[in-house]
Length: 353
Image 1 (cartoon, rainbow, N blue to C red):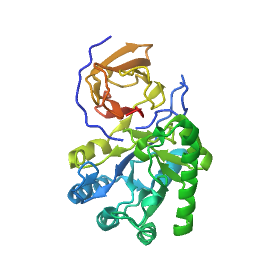
Image 2: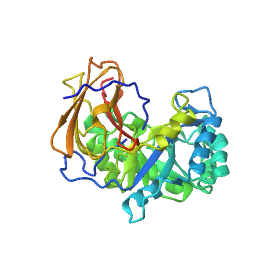
Image 3: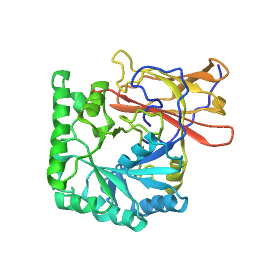
């Protein structure tokens, strides 16, 4: 077991690194195609720095993607690409949550300037409200390469609701939002984003049953060919994280080859404030001796144990109890022998907070 250096990393939006839901697989996953996905909220609205990106930074992001020949797709099209036989290409997705008016006024014109599409996830209860786009704005955006996705009706904390009500309410809101978008925009969304990135396994199954192609969460990382497409990772972009050099590093990140993630669920076990995460990873070409680890709310204890020539187990725990956070991330980054960077992040949710 090696001592691993602790590095404070910048935290953004990874889903799972395998196709299963909560069972491990001993087979090597196929990660030949990757998609880096970013999530934005407000544009040029410095009243809310935690969810805002400056227009200068956003323009720099788009310039980087254009100059470095990334193919930019909607979320729907990216899911099709990952499931297709198309050759692997540098691919990025721009998503926007909530439908704030600043996207329509400030963000959309910049996307048009660069000729890029994007996906906008809307919560239909707020359409036309203060600071939000109305149906005419949304219809116009849709005609300008913007995919409209479902973000529920109320954008509620569904995990706060008792299980006896949670799943019925969640499904009803998904269906209501589908109906309102269909009636007002003439299309039926194929993609979904969980409010606050919060979900449990039954909510994920409901998303599948309603017929969505894929869904976006809010743990950070890179989507790949073997990802669970019902909880895709995204890198959040806000004033805290959106400097051009930080964006560039995320745009060039790769997905870590995780064979097993235990636990797979995002729900923090109720019996501990120091939850343990165990990962089985493929060793191929990775420099596992220099893993960088960051835990929100604590310093990181991390250990590595060799299983065989091709696989290792990584165990991550906080050094101190985490008692004051509703959501927190465990994130690791590391390089391969050629110097390319890899990223993995696991989200924990404590709905009692």
